[in-house]
Image 1 (cartoon, helix red, strand yellow):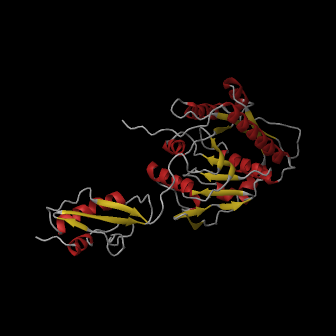
Image 2 (image 1 turned 135 degrees about the vertical axis):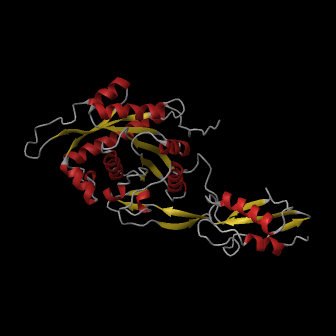
Image 3 (image 1 turned 45 degrees about the vertical axis):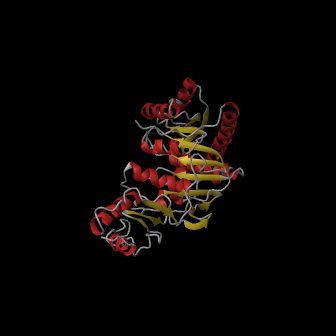
Length: 369
């Protein structure tokens, strides 16, 4: 039986692209470069993006279709090349060449106000004139868009150097992206770790972050494969651990510290932040009530030789500012605004010290047995 290009084309019309259900010939995915040498057939498939998640399965389906519908004797396996319309993402660890410092803001457990601290810290840094980016990587509870007053924003795409790039949303002098922009806010994000990890890699590597002094990443609570994805993708300058003073939170904060400082990860701890340190009622401004315990974070920092970067009290204005999309750090002259301003100053100092005394952090190498 003679093998000719149209026979291959007809066979490939039986392959449907999983993302759309359209056959790959009609979708324009089959390049006009079919080569036939005896029983050996080769050609190229064209993808929209360099990291198309479906392309491996499409190649396998195309190979099988050629054998089933053209001739089972055709040599096709390993002869299908992949071409991309979009330029590939830069390799690791050069995803963010314009970013000077990458800061992980993390906590051992949820409910300690990590997102609030991270958002107000970003605002405080921007108020001081630094170029700041913020990635909301808390993939299952993305709250930063609301706290920055951009919950209904929709990031645009921009063609840059042959790639479709996401343009971060800007407000209060901060460039920000969140998975919250790409899911309905009332929907639960039910994703496997690999899906969540790939989404975050896109928000990091396929976005126009530009020149930044500080790129803050609001990590999910706990220790998970999302954390591993991030440290395998970016050389993180250092981590800031947020906790309340209570023992239950501190026990989890220790786990968070151990995750970053372990031999395989080796990310320096820049310092700790004690959130909800005390409560002062507006009518009794001199009084302090230590609802969650007293100076627990301060003791943990001291025991481990870490800096206490800041103590943030429980203040109704912090909650109101988060709900209203106007972070309290915008008011630098208020008592709470000054607390976040001091936290920002202490972070800058801690980062400078770390960069003077320690080598640049590398990305965590992926090892497979």
